Length: 437
Image (cartoon, rainbow, N blue to C red):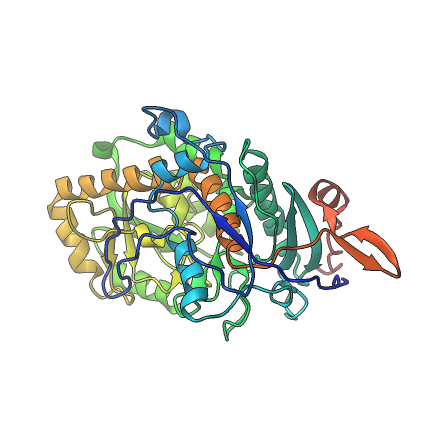
């Protein structure tokens, strides 16, 4: 793959008309309260090109109604701010990080994608509302391509559904691997997740919000509909804690299986993807997890890819201390009247105590599950929220990044950079599979 020549640098400051009411909770010792600013900071460089958005307004008396608005990708910025006031934590943190450490603006060098040998990177240009692919760096395994397609389609939908609001011109690099692949946290790339010790990364919605095309999961809105159609009432749910997964992924999962073994409250079972007979006996679809009152979350290679699906259940999510951050991680409330998850130690040594307490207090458990639905399924994990997050991510990035150029000069000829997403996606070729596979 070729790397396109770099362009001049300009600074874009985007003043988003977001009135974000931040009343954030603490999950000590992992989180602290956040200040309330959106993208109204000063320039990080010597000069700035100011791009002002046309003011947007929520209709008089409008409030987010999940029955009506959950799949509305076209909420304007004022509606997004009113509907999801606590959604933008990771974006505020990323912008604040560049200011507090005086990192300056993101440069063209920062969005290069050829630095990593393991691939899984795409360089993207958003220009006048059109999505363009500038460069790619694929891995040999090939599964990064479906993920990239899902991410790019999700971005494309957020752009096309923005109605009359202008999308700023930006250029950025997307990593679609389980890990950011940058252990020294050098590159400000867009990632599926970041380690809590990697503040230079920008966390985006993962590919699963479009579709995860594997057995037992699938397209996101279809999963939500399947849950809505098939989830039993609380009193009819299995009263145990459910988990399925491969334990060889990490020691956390081995600890969960070990601590849960033989307990009356446990339906925790290991699966082995290459054991077809065992898979038939033990594997569960996402909606089938919702048949249980309690669902366990564990990190995998990094974050928990299934976590957002399980948070669509009217169930109690039992979550260990997180190291890998997603856009919604900060919304976990582990105590108090708004509690929406049950927090356990990372080694699960307190899991037995927590589960016994929950089994003795079914009314408390049901309230936690109800709070979870209100926070996640009916608000912050709706498709509408994902579209709002993408568009705010574009604006946040523009406020600390260079202004890209559409044209480049190659051998004395002026030409457009990259390929339109519409053309790129129809011409995309997958790497050839090994004949022995």
